[in-house]
Length: 193
Image (tube, rainbow, N blue to C red):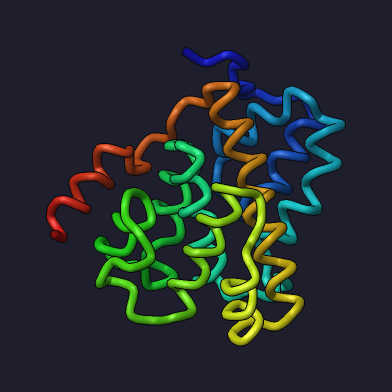
């Protein structure tokens, strides 16, 4: 049951402006943003950071970004965020069903990961989630593949989506219509074995 109910339209003017700025033109605001808008000052403060994490100036590729976000959401048990990102971005960045399933319930050694770059991103997220750190061996591999700017973006992107997952899970944001659920993703994993 939802702990903080998302705002419902019609929105007061400052809320309507903030929600409109957080979404692509013509797309209604998602439930997470409508929940965050219950604290408009906080939402104003984090909007710039969220825009950076999802924007074109992030030094990681869009595919890198989605691998990190999907794996982080899955490791945090955040069905809401995993579903939203799979629904909106997985196909756009070339993540196939086996890769989506692996991000949710698999490992970086699954046969669907043929690119070392993808595998390293998953390993980094797993290390950060498990111990809030990356050991020297993995860091050396990351540093050989990614620039320092990309490594910094990777670390903060993973942390940002831990925070987003904490909010979505802790407030029990309702799941978005049409976004895949954990059982849907688990079926993909079963079908791809």
